[in-house]
Amino acid sequence: MPSAPLSDKPARRVRPLPREFVHRDAKRTWEGPLLDRPGRKKPASAVSAQETEPYARQHRASPWQVLRVLCRSDFRARYRAQALGAIWSLLNPLVMMGIMSLVFTQVFRTTTRFFPIFLLIGLIVWQWVVSSVNTATQVFVSNAEVIKRTVFLRQLMPISVVLSYGLNFCIECLALLVFIPIFPGAFRFSPALLLVPVLLALLVILLCGVVLATSVLNVIYRDVAYIVNTALLLLYWLTPVFYPMEVIPMPYRMILQCNPIAGVIVNLRLVVMQGQVPSLLAFGELIISTFLFFGLGWLIFRHYERMVLDHV
View 1 (cartoon, rainbow, N blue to C red):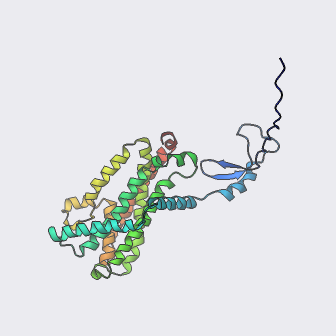
View 2: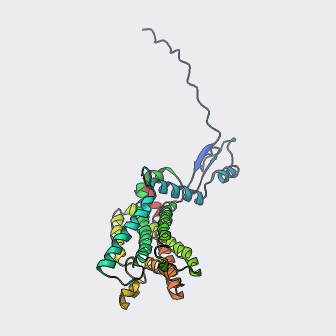
View 3: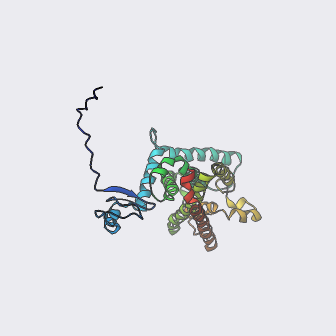
């Protein structure tokens, strides 16, 4: 039986390998020549690791660059395909302020002066807390493909959520500027306002510590997201968002003062509405509790970080 004729198709041309490849490890990404695996003898054409270090320095992304990209993408994705966009950040606290001010001034007859401004400060701070904690708790589960396919510092992802919602907080603070001519007596312009960035920085550190712990624990134990949601609901009533701390009896007031979020809200109202500097004792308690929560969250994250890729 005659053999089948050979094909007239030309032989496939093999593309040469590129001179540079993308290398990734746990801390960086860079371009450079292909190196052999450890333990195998290198060919003569292989380039030493010292020669690839300039490529690593040139193409290495700093943590600040990664954090900026994550924060920007999270903020843009939140308002994508929305007609009003970031205006929703202003409408939500304003609607809540209008409804609760009507209830507490006309029905319950609160004695708090300038209650709408008092309430608005608490609402915009609490909105930042609950939004960032709820979202950052599920950030690793929601971005599983990003975690598996890219290499960067994992702790930057929950921290970027806190900072992106901090942009929402800045937008919501514009509502306070609108009420300056309406309630001029509710604001005191004094040197104490210089403490506002310090108090907000302490709040950022506190939230970062909380979300570092909840985000990594939620990867391993998926019930953590429901526990966090319930805990925030309980914490809302234990935080002076719509009531002053002075109405709480003294034995219980000391327990509420251990809440660092309450300390931030109370001191912000003191600085903005009364123009007074917080006492050294209150400020020291706030700093200690903030860094205590951050240190605890950091230790929990470092302990369970290696398990994220296995459970995500």
